[in-house]
Image (cartoon, rainbow, N blue to C red):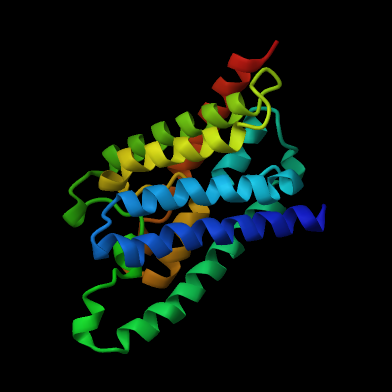
Length: 231
């Protein structure tokens, strides 16, 4: 397996989680609201797809890897290495923000109210968010399926060359606007794992949903994308 491809997946996922969690932890509670993480995730993937996507294909997401296998675009033999690199990249970003967040919280309780916690930015269902497991599962399946249809279509030989990262980044922005109020927007098990492992509790116990639903959605979307774009 190509070491540079694995490094690209690690770095790309690191930047993705840095953008998403950083915006959700700091910008969103400061008044930017859900637009902050939605813009951050879309732009992070757009930037990294142009920067390192040529080295690895620019998955940065275990669900995307699974979906591209279903689409016939990726060798399943390389999947485990990609997924490990993605999860480790996300965890590295989360640990960096844990250090930063601890430094912010040490300023005192009044200052701490300006920041979110890892529990608040994790993907969950029930409780104050108010959506059932079924609602959350359906949302994650549908939005990830749409995302894979965009990926497969925009990277097709028939699509305009060079515009795939733009289409993918804009799609992520739109899908996050739709899903943040329901699930805090996963679409990406690596993104879900990073804050959940640090938050523990509900976020960690419900993490399985944000692995299973996005992967199911990605496989469905990958298969549909393959059918739509095959000769």
